[in-house]
Image (cartoon, rainbow, N blue to C red; front, side):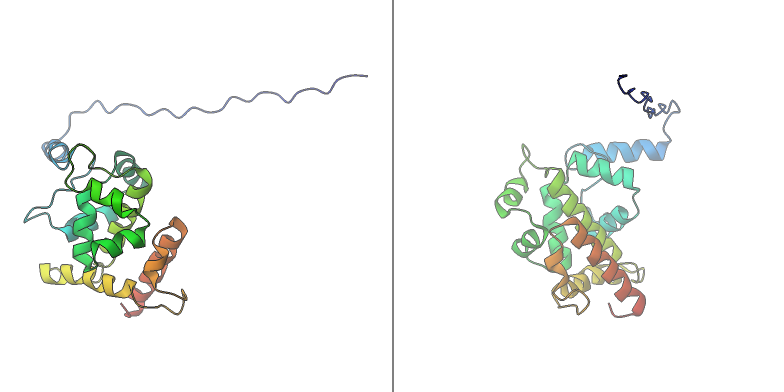
Length: 196
């Protein structure tokens, strides 16, 4: 009796990324410096200024590629970002952390604490998703600062109103990934129908 032959071993393709040897442009260099000089080090400028407001930062999150978002989540989101996102939407900090499934104790520990100021990947993912939702709420807004700041306020109200399609308020779905995806779908639908 012969023994069965083992299947042949097929080599797994290896993904290699070539290093970019071109010198960064002046704009790229200043962006990289701003990122390093913002809250901690990382690939994204989370620092609020008079010219870089919460609605600008959330809109920038919406425009990022998935690979960039993955890097942002891996590096971690500063705790202070959650504070100004909750203020931008008009939601209390306590309510925002509960909606996102982030422990209040963890969130409080991250705020303004230089030693431990960034959330871990799971909580960062929730905060980035919330920021992108805020950015999405600005899509139908005008160009003035007042109009851009109204989108997040409307989002805060919309999240707390029961949606028949969801069977609950959208905020109750923000603490897990599939729920956040469903909220995005519903928000886009309401924006396109003019119900937002």
